[in-house]
Length: 329
Image (cartoon, rainbow, N blue to C red; front, side):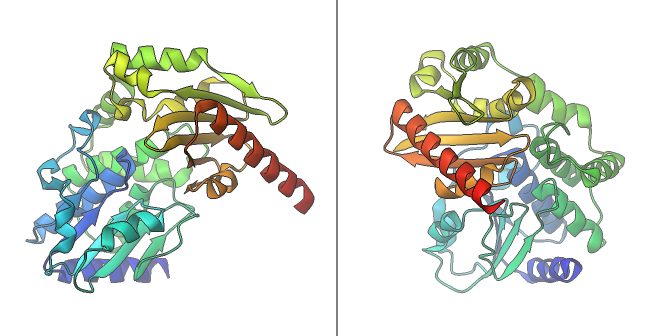
């Protein structure tokens, strides 16, 4: 079935006259890398794909090729000539549905992901929960369809795998991640470029914000969870963009002696949550809190809440999920 869907996606995109590739609401290396790798292939097929991003591409990804194909203009969805729209690493159906509202025709909707919480909302769905990253799903797509992997596409796919496995350190890392990465390096991707861009380049102001969040680390009594928070004032007073904090949750999960942790970040209308665990199931918590993700790494949102209110709500949900889990077992 996996190979069949790969073939269907290949045929659909290759036949498309005007394909649109879509990254997740919050741009990261996996979503962007997957979309750009496909864009590279389509360009070589003589197509003129566009890559839609909600916000401008973060500075840390400026080393990637084909960024001139990206656009933040939602007007692209109103183009009557669109005949294929592919979503990469977009697990939330509501996000896709909102973007598709102005679409005038009936293009084929392609949904490629590795989050088990994905509802399979596309006409063609390639959701492989055993994959360490959506970029690894797309690596399989290239190999299954005998598509030559250019140096540029290899760099994009390696970036996605590296990002979503936290440099091959988190619980989602498996043998597929290493096998794909090794092959992509053979195709010309430079791992040093990815490591330098995603892990080593940290500005002093960003590190100050990280420091403030580290000082706020605290336990949620009776849950086994550790929590911290980052405010808008933290960002504004240090001149730091939200994108510069993307890897903070992964950093904490490797450094803090706790089974499960959550980072709350002040956002429009409430608090955004990023959760990581060693042995628990944060996807269960995420689903209750209007989010999604993996068992070991997930995100959610608590609307209209201060830090204190959000922490209380999180504690309630965590305790309810833990109680439910015990009753089932």
